[in-house]
Image (cartoon, rainbow, N blue to C red; front, side):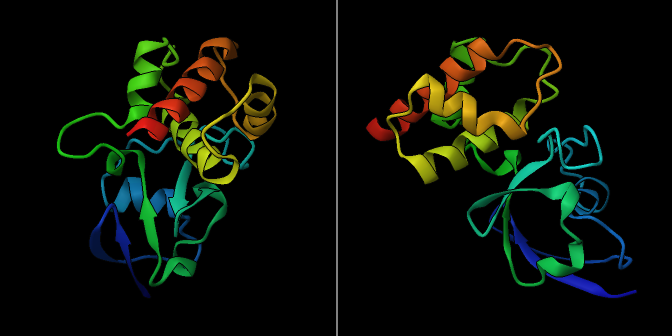
Length: 157
């Protein structure tokens, strides 16, 4: 079986994987990083969103072997020194967590949104940028508010 070597949450890792292994499977099943969820297996729901070399991707649409030498950040790698990242804190404070299943993907997408669009995000921008993330609780209002607040907090940090 081929081996893939990459950096995950700042830590170098290697794993033997089958050619058909998806990045999300590598993270969850081989590395035990279960914060990244599999919601639809079709890359439509965004629950599996992680950062690949700093950019948001749906890890259920990426083959693990194509990640040789890349840097991956999962929700487990966002908080630093035991403190929530400002985006995570904003989800907590604005009740954007709801049932929690989509939350890791929403936070990772929110962080990617800030990287691409900046810290001053209006509601329309957040809603349109979240188009690839599905919340089955159907309550996007608090998620949108949390991403806006998290973006502002990141600017101050």
